[in-house]
Image (cartoon, rainbow, N blue to C red; front, side):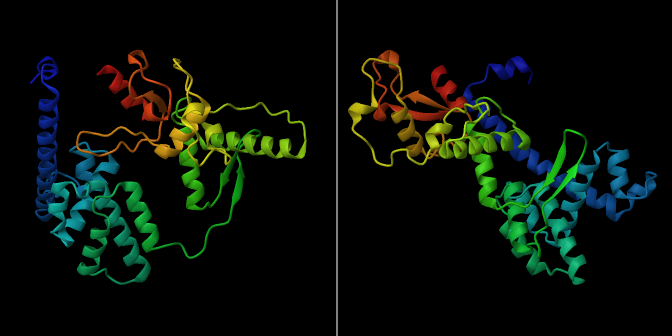
Length: 315
């Protein structure tokens, strides 16, 4: 099927075809694993002139080193726990998460000097089902936390740059992610250097203002950051003070309350009843279009991510 034929498909046809292809792709991956097993068992890589399956995958089949490593790691854990092949086929685990699991198990065995039993492996694999790589990393950290937190240190790289190594609490990491979401309109991929500059500038300015010190720092304007101030209203005020008659303008009070109500998350509901989880590039949307008489009040304003706001507009 060529590109032009695909463009002629309906929305439902495209979704249905992709779902079928995803299922086929998973079956191919599982089949590939069993073929690699046969190459390993028969030592076919030796006949092909290579010293290991890894070298064969990289040099003959042209896999990158990380991809070859991932497949071999998945192969090892499927050998140890054959039942996990079904989870791979269903999408409950991926080659990446299986590789992470195998690496963790191997590290545990090296540290303790004891083999991890099949029952322990099954229990561990159950804990990573339907989890992203980020979530699997968190599971691994909970199972085997470090005994002593590393000390902070600074490495000076040149006259203008230094590398900061710091151990932080997860709550601070959550704040970093929240700040990224708030500034996603202006910067989709901010560096930690940019985020720290922004946070410290705001903190310094606030403290200097409180102490009556004249600050020379340039004030940074971040869309919706002011809406997160602690003195934002917790109770719903009178509707009259939240709207401007016959105006597209959305008052700050309305924006503040709508953001709190939506928990700073897109409010778009998909056809299957699931709510969009995006916190990036949030925009204020008139539920009933302003051009059709929609008001700029609490009952008619919602938060949508940029993607769903554009999607709604196109419909």
